Amino acid sequence: MSTVIEHRTWRYATKKFDATKKVSEEDLETLIEATRLSASSYGLQPYHILVISNQETKEQLKPASWNQSQITDASHIIVFANATDFGEELVDDYVANVSQTRNIPEEGLRGYAEFMKSKLIDLPLETKDSWTAKQAYIAFGNLMQAAAELKIDTCPMEGFESEKYNEILGLEDKNLNAAVVLAIGYRSEEDETQHYAKVRKSTEELFTLI
Image: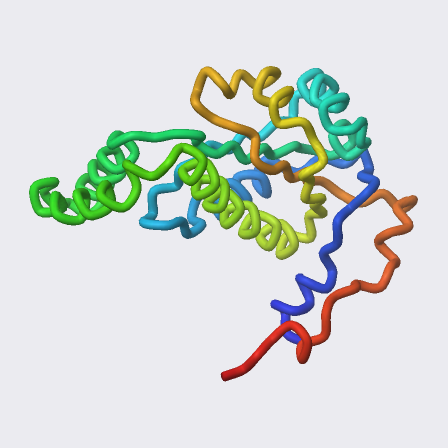
């Protein structure tokens, strides 16, 4: 079995974490960098990611997470918050970054900048919110796979109240919304779900090769 498939087979949505085990600073830095390098549409990365290890904050978030134990028992809680709205600054900041990183005059990037703005800036607010959330999910998936490669357990979580997360974490003032949460850490030996067979659609049912 290839390593790629092995990692995906090993990973499962951990329901009970060992609260005594913490992700090392070295591994956390690797996960953060792997997530930073994720692809996004136009490369704009219209989201912000909060990495929470503070136990008091996790305790505050637990009631807003349907009282799921993963929130307080996991080593870290990672909140992907998408930008609910944006203006030309999203593109302008990106172009400035491209100019500095690749040593290209911003003048030479003006045409591409105007193209991006023409496709994004006038979108309805609801469409912007949906699009930025989708971009956050791309990074979210990359983080899960990076964690599996390091044999760090994860639990993807949509079972939480975004409005309360936004309030607790001060996201609304930053034009952000908690889109999805990933608990990371190490599985408890008592978590029976680690022994369950992975249930997925068959290749024939899921794929059409043309």
